[in-house]
Amino acid sequence: MMNLKPGDGSDPLQDAQTATWLGLRGLGSLAAGQHLKIGLGESIVVGRSRHCDWSLRRAPEFLMSDADARGAIEDDLTFNSVSRRHAKLTYVAPDMLEIENLSANGTLVDGVSIDKLVLTDVRTRSHRIQLGPMGVVLELSPGSLPV
Image (cartoon, rainbow, N blue to C red):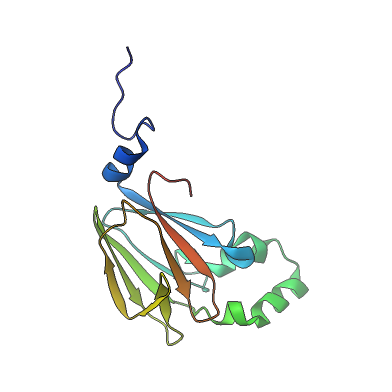
C-alpha cells in the first residue's frame, strides 16, 4: 500500500485546501498563454507595462507578432483598456486574496466593478478578473487547478 500526502495530486479537494499558491492565466486571444503563480504572502501587479508581474506586453501573441501586428495590437481598444499598472493582487492568507483597482478604467471581479475587494474563497473556486470595461479577462484559480 502506498502512502499519499497532501499536495501529491491524489485528492484534488485536499490539494486545493492546502495550496500555498494560486494560478493566474489570461483568457481570450490577446492574453492567452500567459500564466503566473501567486505565492502565499505575495503581491503582484497586472497591467500592460513590461514592469508588471503579469503584463500584456509579455503575452505570447504580442511577443510573437511583427512590428506591424504589434502596432495594430497597441491601437486596439482591448489593449488600451488595460492601464500600465492596472490592479494589484495580494494573497494575504490561505483563503484570502485582496484585489485593488489601480486604474481609472476600472476592474471587474466576477462581473462586478470594484475599488478594493477581499475574496475569501480562493482555495475553493475560480474567479474572473476583467481589466477595464473592454479589457482582457484573467482567471484566478486555486493552486491545484491547472494554469
